Image (cartoon, rainbow, N blue to C red; front, side, top):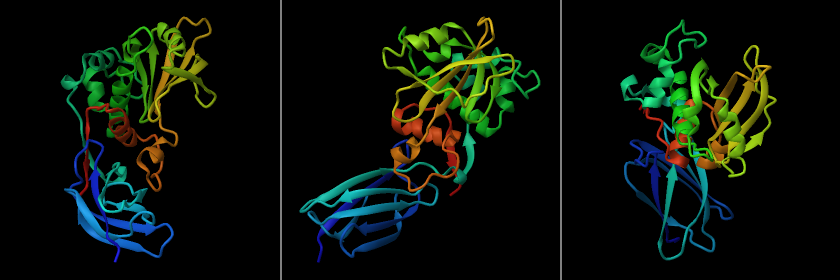
Length: 291
């Protein structure tokens, strides 16, 4: 009888236990030993017993939780001791029932000022300040807060953060925003390349606003959730704009070891999970699950 024991701790990106029951699937890499443990209470750590131990103790472990994405990792069951393993599960955005957003007055001073100064945002009928903030749908508002949080935590070589250079918003989408910026943001971003804060990337897939020409694009050097700044300017380079987004690429799958990501990997709710899990940056809103 195998004697190996595996203690599993299942957490969300905020470090809280999952408040639901989960199914666990274990598949041994070489032996004929597949296990299924169903409806386990994940609100605390739990132990799965009678597993094969090292040197023949390697299992592929899949965690299937109703409100979270399916994750999978390889675990080697040690001999003679309890093997402890923690999984962090990202939310399945299709299970988000609602989003709890902070009130306008609870936003940072920089975020409030930016919204107050932005009365020409495409599609929002001259709204600004609290009226603009309240008019945003959940996806746009989440994307905006993600970018505010990330840009305020991204410091350039001169020790100013990126957000401090953003002047007015011109367009808000779920995964990005376009904004007029202080021209110094471009030069300071270039200077930050030497300090490995940013690195230049291809800008060919980005389309500028009318009467603007793409100049170049830069991305932070984070392993996951990179801030990307794509600059454009008018022909005289007197007016500058930035297309700002948080690029996930394939980082979501790698960070969480999800079996397959669901749809667009730059969805704001996915970026929310990345920022909290990999950078401890809290965008300030809460995803409420449909449990």
